[in-house]
Amino acid sequence: MKTLSKVKIAGRIIHKAKSLGASLAGLATIDELKRAPAFTFSPRMPYWEGVGSRENELGLKPGEVFWPDVAQSVLVIAVEHPVDKPEMDWWFGKANPAGNRVLIAIIKQLCDWISSTFGIETFHFPYHVEKGGIYLKDAAVLAGLGCIGKNNLLVTPGYGPLVRLRALALDAVMPSTGPIDFDPCTDCKAPCRKVCPQSAFQTQLYKPEDYQQEHLPGRTGVYARPDCNLQMEQNIDGAREEKMDGFDKPVKLVKYCRRCEWACPVGRKKKKSTPSFI
Ligand code: B12
Ligand code: SF4
Ligand code: SF4
Image (cartoon, rainbow, N blue to C red; front, side, top):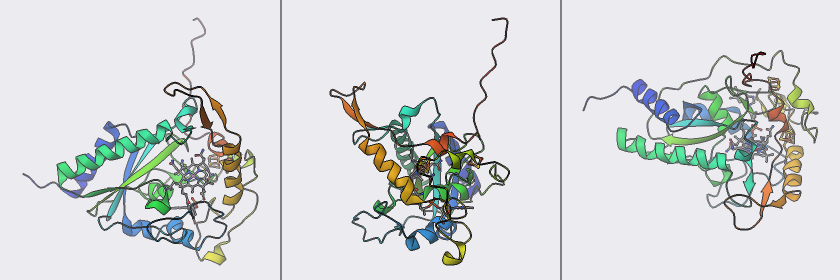
């Protein structure tokens, strides 16, 4: 069989990801990831407050990432979570949200396809970092999917922050597809920061001189993770049982806050204007 160049393999993998339902897909190397802000900052981050510091079987300290032997590059995919499909994000009791299940299914199929087509070993990263996952937003920035916005979310040119992410590792160094020259936040008045019910973007909790790095949560250290996490806990406490299709009994529906995500105008599709004579 003719040997394909890495560039061609990368192109085919990205094309396959999109044909399986990914809205966006891109590649970054593990060496790039290891130097990325979330990876260098997290193990030194105070205020974990229980988020991401739960007991784990990998022996990881809070914030540490587990790198499997096969990890040389990562493929990051994004699936759009449009405003008019909020249910993609809802937790039904302990059941994964529908959007998460879509991401998992795409990555599973890609893992099988990549190893059978190119003979490259793969690893499906779990969601939680303490269970062996990676920092997906930074990975997505390096893979060229978008930038970190003032709302501390990945903001993509086509879908704004309205995406969810997942990744797999490849046992081959692939050409990186990013980062891209894109920053819609510079001249934006940041409505995303004003809508937060917990005022999580009000104070600079982390300072560059304390961490010897420029990029911090909320870009400059102004995102207060403990405040945001409090909102998530309130959302869990306030969840009500509702009757839902596909469930025999009423199920607890957790609808986590997305205000900083929804307030961002980037990537909103303009509704087709209806001709006035109809
Ligand atoms: C733990 C977690 C939480 C915790 C803590 C969040 C946090 N950021 O600390 C809580 C429960 C509070 C939370 C809340 C939310 N989360 Co959350 N969360 C995660 C998880 C599992 C890990 C994130 C983490 O710990 N990061 C480490 C911290 C230190 O990183 P950070 O805060 O992002 O800060 C870094 C970046 O800003 C970066 N950075 C800044 N500038 C620049 C510039 C460049 C060039 C680069 C490369 C990097 C960079 O540097 C900082 C570190 O120094 C990820 C999934 C995953 N495996 O990645 C989802 C994830 C980040 N969450 C997600 C979402 C959507 C949410 C919520 C909207 C809730 C919801 N409805 O789902 C809110 C939004 C909060 C916000 N505005 O950031 C999505 C984000 C999608 C997107 N478009 O970005 C993710 C990726 C999950 C997914 N399903 O796709 N989350
Ligand atoms: S609302 Fe403005 S500042 Fe906030 S993420 Fe979107 S473009 Fe950036
Ligand atoms: S998800 Fe809600 S609570 Fe958390 S930062 Fe965004 S607006 Fe604030």
